[in-house]
Length: 145
Image (tube, rainbow, N blue to C red; front, side, top):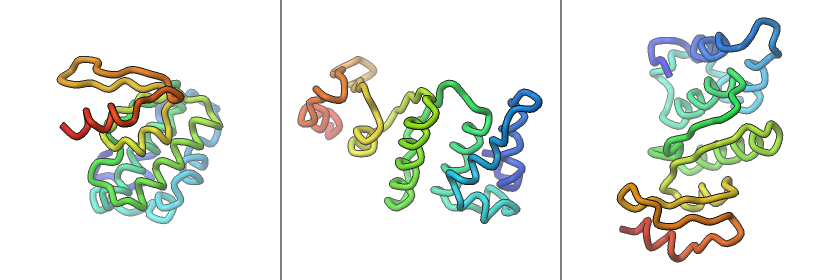
């Protein structure tokens, strides 16, 4: 996000990627993240960490991507906001079909979203499975290192 711009201006940057006449992406993002609607004129750099993360995700979504890349979206975020972000991502996944690639250390967050898992250890694939056969103890052991 651009800290010197307002929340609304940050979202407008994302909207620039839309083709002319494409739908009301801004309204959809504000529905997903109501806090952004409340803080539309606030400078993005003055938002909390969780609000900044919501803004970053919202700005990416506003351009209607086919794939969303998420690099540790829970890092440094308070638990209540982590739950909000997870719920929004789950809703996006179910309703829009946007593919997501998630890099995350918080196992419960990841298992609440993903269909397939790949656990890296030192940059090498240590475990890989679908959601139904995920070996949680093995993953937990690798994450505890």
